[in-house]
Image 1 (cartoon, helix red, strand yellow):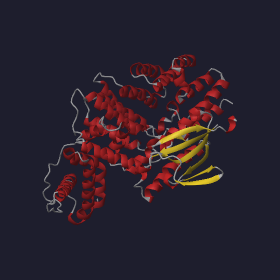
Image 2 (cartoon, rainbow over the protein chains, first blue to last red):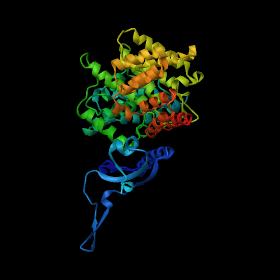
Image 3 (cartoon, rainbow over the protein chains, first blue to last red):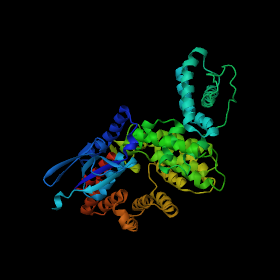
Image 4 (cartoon, chains in turn blue, yellow):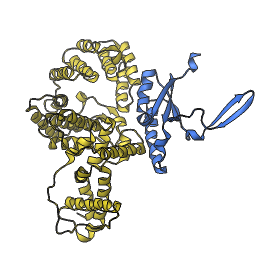
Length: 117
Length: 395
């Protein structure tokens, strides 16, 4: 079964990071991705630019409305995601707990609904 | 030895000692770290020209203290000097007090987030940098560094005292210190080459040396010593090797001997504790190097004592595993059944043990299903490979 981990964190925690810090951050995630791949459960991941760079699109009365900024303004914002393929929620939670984001932010685990409809 | 090499050696051996001395009065760990870093830099430029001082540690402390005073003077807008001490007269007693124990109690103070106890101790007592700590805790080095900075600000702002807690507070406070050291030992995920196992052993032995009258400090030091002695035997060809199947020729006998001596010293006090019991279990396993056999009956007794005095899910599973070998697989299964089912169903060691025992009593299909569930919960590669091999042997 596929599960998506939504990685939430407070952008203020990363405000002072240098390019060197980011490189190290990438290494930490690289190790995690490696572990997921080694276990054969890795499906996909991405790392997103900060929420304040988001553009939100909607259609109202047949017109496209484009809004500068994220859909919801929250202190902790979505910074990236992982998709894993594991047998059940227990296994998904075991891997989510090892996600680096869990140490300084929150990891929301959601099951895929694709197979249920 | 060159001045550079000497400075590096002093840095490794006495980093925590010097930080503890510098910070114990001001409670400002960050300022102590900066001042000591400056003093080391100064040593690297002065020692090659003027020779290595008779007492390098005293020289570094004096230089760092001058530095701290300069900063205070500068803050008060007073002229400061950039002096280094004269080589001839180290104006400090050669054997100044070891304040590291106090520093360890500060790091594990209840006002500091428990998750930071181990990282703080690794950084201030051993000088491990935030990069390595972050890597070991699977968290970005920047986030780790920020938290450590915040914790140090809190220690200074709240004037957390540098002292050994008195009798009434000691049991609870010491237990936090022991947990923090144990935390450094328990960090092993992804079995990176840059593991902090050696640092954990150093911290545990230091604590035992500084508090030899506390049996649990010796128990923890023995426990980590035994575990570390088997470092080379634990993983073969990328696969975990269970303790009772390890090649004893790969164990480090001197470490085992030292751990055994510490444990027997601890037990003389007649005050049993969790770490002593866990170390005693390790000692029974270590004895196989001499006798060639694992004494499962002794292990069962110790595991039963551990489960009775300090009940945890892990201890209950280990007791069942020992009973399975000392008595019978059926007895092991009976003990496993006594564990609360909802907890056991998601607890990887319980599932792996039950899988093994089902295999032993000829229930291969059940064993395979249990191994599958256990494997899905295993995030450590060497352990997963081991379980996969056990599962494959059943098909």
